[in-house]
Length: 311
Image (cartoon, rainbow, N blue to C red; front, top):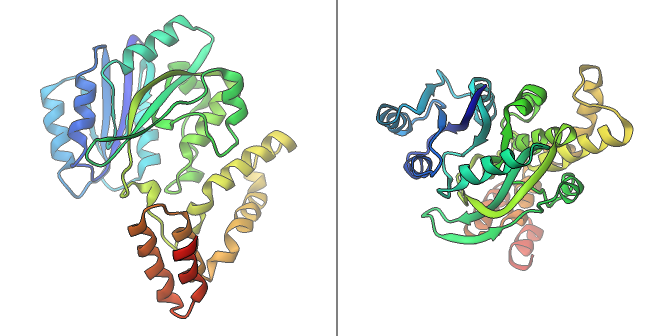
């Protein structure tokens, strides 16, 4: 562990439109003792070229390459393993942060030795960087812990900063969530089991509302993804209430049974699957996209058409 150093992790895949803004928001930080560990996850655009240009310009930027696409989770785990700063934080390659983000979070941890993880509020921004809205999370540990297993999760996963000892104690993202999402929620819940959490009240992180984000892309071949939040919450509720960890190898069949309870009705009904996605969407263009997909599998389905217009 290197005293005073902040390690920042950034997996990057096909983000050439946004990566300049992401990296520049770090270069412009008022706190200068940081390292950016950034990994090109086998991008097919100019993401890798841009990363190399920045790493030549600034020796605090340390670039890595995956020989094949590993996905966000495995790339994040790879970078966390390399991080040796006193503090560790994150920035997604399509997001940005305020120039005082690092110094505010670091000083909070410096001044509150009992806190292991601290997050901040976020600004939700459009694809072109305009502010859409602001979200402020609860700041005290009691309210944070009470919200961990609810729909109102009390952190933005990429906006948190941890002490190095958290990494050593809790470890990495659970590969069960690979390419499904919710891995950051699972990890933060496990962090909060061992360390006292907090949030600062300022919105220091700019979260881009990107419709091409991996968390927004679904496939009928991966039905678990649309239920992953409910599956994850159920896993932690069972662990707390029954003291049964479904991730233990001997509980494989119990985990499989839980997952099937959410997914079985969709496995052989793609029309129902795309109708479900349509009803989740707020964007009219995305709703229409899923309507067309649903009708492709049952063009006489009047119910889907009715839901499109009236729900």
